[in-house]
Amino acid sequence: MTGPALIEGLAGIVGPRHVRTAPAERLTYARDGLPTYSRLPGVVVLPGTRDEVVAVLRLLGSSSRAAVAFSRSTRRTAWPWSSPAS
Image (cartoon, rainbow, N blue to C red; front, side):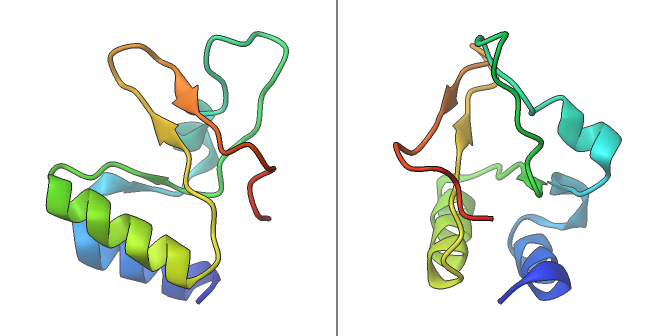
């Protein structure tokens, strides 16, 4: 699953209001506390429940996509050790 189908699947889990695809909306999530590293995410998903988090991670895993956790309270990310899949 790629592109529009993946976005549609994510929106089906968390609702379209909680999926960010516009570059200006994703820019907020392009960096954390590391001022020298920045990477614009392909999509930002804002799950509201544990079940949504689980469903999002399962969908991404079944599509061989990387997930990067971003903490709202600390503005820190939890990057996977390998580079995110493009």
